Length: 176
Image (tube, rainbow, N blue to C red; front, top):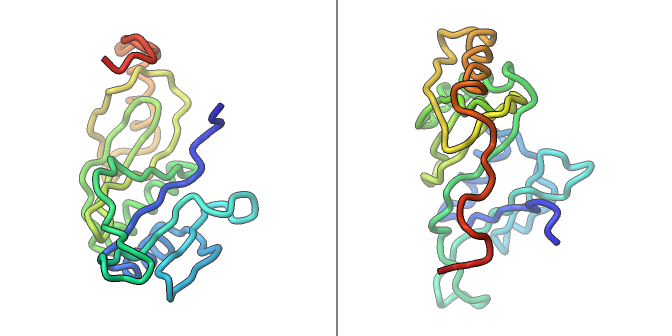
């Protein structure tokens, strides 16, 4: 049985630019890397988890180790932050770096900033609120003008209006 998500790998066109973004801007620690192979392992908790993200350099079919095409169809890469202050720091950092912010929302259960990384993969940094709100839900917020208290009260308000988690709606184990 699966016990959790181990890590995500992204194959990059510009390995060094992506390595810089995820280490310097996002703040992950490089735990291992092989620059000649174009491989880098990064972790938010290097003392307890070797890597949550693996970056690899794309390469063509003529490469001695074989082709490794750029990653496609990744919905998003999401990172948890410890508090609203950390989320606000990412909002400031993204703006200072010129990182494209796609949207800033509350999902009730979390408060999130969605962004594009240097190769246009969608990323998310989010703070878990602890509120119980069924998902597929999001409402815009403004980190620049709303206080933490306003955002969290707004997020909590959806516990009542949107309802609790719903579980599966379709039979599980039947692909049609």
